[in-house]
Image (cartoon, rainbow, N blue to C red):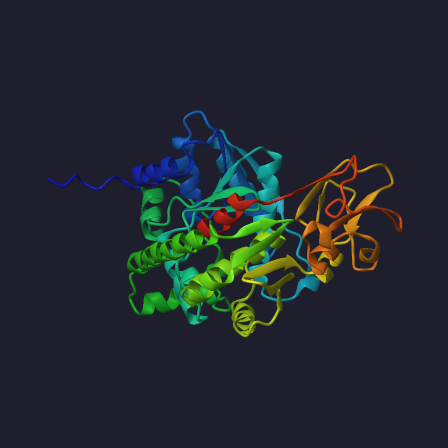
Length: 412
């Protein structure tokens, strides 16, 4: 006999158990809308001794936003939860897509907030409707399988674990739950503003009577396909050689692999070199792949890619390393950790000029690798080039290793 379906709150708690059972503390992002309000109440019931903190990002885009944030604070206090308001300061000079800028700003504010309060993860109230809308929006933009796989239940980003325990629950289910429990929520009028792509997609789904759960199921199925592609890309990456902060990929297996596998490994390799949060644009990657196929060297997002015997070498581009500027330690160019820096000294790129007096070939470095390597300077005086010549008291260590490359391939 089939067991009856679990009630809504039990389903959310089961997802939280999968995603956050090991965590002693958890942050919750709450806007005051129905989805995040329901999540806050359910997490308060699920907490079981865990430290739960709530944050509301006030984007300042509507006159009511400050009072709405205070309403969330009052509701959190009733549940015994600490609440913080995070103010987003819009940079007018940024231009571009307002919603995209607000999203990026929100994630940065929340990750900084979580780190200040020792919160290893933050939960969001995204639903099956959000997942379906995301898939359709990305489909309209010609997204590949990564984009169409939609939002993941868990993701590591900005040093924080992001959780979405309600991706298999609809907005309507949550509002019924709130109504049944006598809990109010805030309706954001911008959710009816057809200037925004998401709102237009939402209206189109309603007009066509599209089932958000069915579309969200397609996103989950595409997510499984993405995981399979990543699995086989990670197997190919096991043949990679890591040396001096550069990545060497065996050329023949890459050429034999399906183009999609090659593309994924190239993107992960570039992100591994630079530590970038986001992959390069798709067309830029495709252009790079065309150049590689003709055995030409090419630059992709600050990474120099060139044939080297039977390998494909990925090296930090010297010009990009130079743009990283100076650091007084310990980290430089999002690639290196340097210990032993003395007062008045700083870290900056070595550059090409000093190479004439340094044994860069003896260390097995290419000229570009040597030029983009970290150097210790006192003003304009070169003190040490630790990758080219051992020199106490400086210790230089790369920030990423083979495990990080595998993580880039497998985690979304």
